[in-house]
Length: 136
Image (cartoon, rainbow, N blue to C red):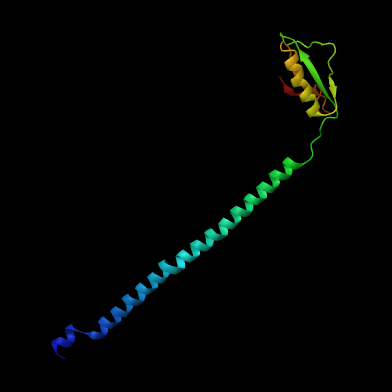
């Protein structure tokens, strides 16, 4: 064997070149397709769960807010004097069946009697004291 064949062993270089090419191809496929594909699939599924969870939380909040509340059957307008004590004004209506009508009368009373404050109250079944809904 001559020195040229010893120095240039073409089989070793070919195998080395093939190993480098196949390894670089493996690394390119691994980092170019496999890992990004796994990560994208994970975030796609995780995003679906986040959206689904948000929908369920919104639906639950909506159901809790939309449930019928125990509304009072009767409302009262209570006048207070300048010192904050309950008082009585002759000639005004104080008992109402609906909230809107009581609120409307309360605003009218406030204009007619500016030195008095008025509270819209009702007796709820779960409380011992009357509940104040509005105060002007």
